Length: 102
Image (tube, rainbow, N blue to C red; front, side):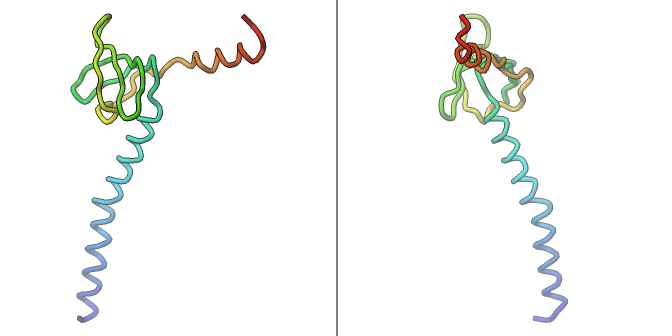
């Protein structure tokens, strides 16, 4: 192989990395951060377009409330956006327990 061919292969590999691999890694990292931020009480949008409230997070699934009395289970990957984060009641309760307040 001559030098020109090697340079072309290197450029092709660099373009593939920049246009395909990096954006894919970034999307995976963003989805993992979104899934880690899920918690009971959060209002989220699912891939189907439903706006729901998270009731519980169990492994790779979330139990959601579509409306009062109507629940469903969805995979975490179906959550595309957190519209309103969960209230941090757990931290407040832990603080109260540590101080002995009732």
